[in-house]
Image 1 (spheres, helix red, strand yellow):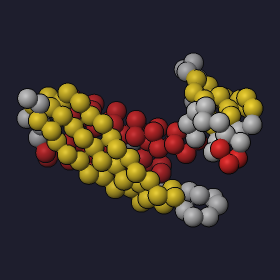
Image 2 (image 1 turned 90 degrees about the vertical axis):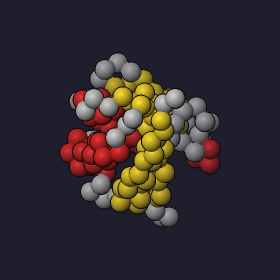
Image 3 (image 1 turned 180 degrees about the vertical axis):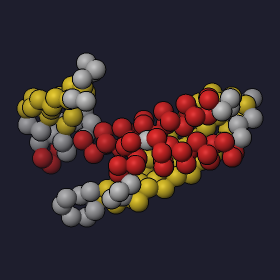
Image 4 (image 1 turned 60 degrees about the vertical axis):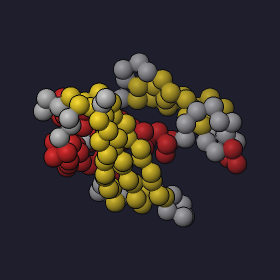
Length: 139
């Protein structure tokens, strides 16, 4: 896998993926940022959230669960001093569907966290990551 990050101005950069997608990254205002894009640490959280959500949805579909919606609300704590690494990350999954099985949802989240989600597994080597979920019934 390859990527390219190019400096634009001040603390603004454009990231380009090997799959030909681009994203603007910008730093905080106090360091010259102008709110033109996400901060890199925000991007890291979103990447991890996307990775684990992909797994959970895929696993539930393979388990023949009637899932119609899934989103992950992610909260992170960072160290007070530089480097301001993540110290804790909590992922709250909200899943919607018809008759979703609580045990299957738990299993999907556990499999993602322990076996499939490269981003979560990599981050868990130095960050405490916790999960919970809620199920909303389709009407």
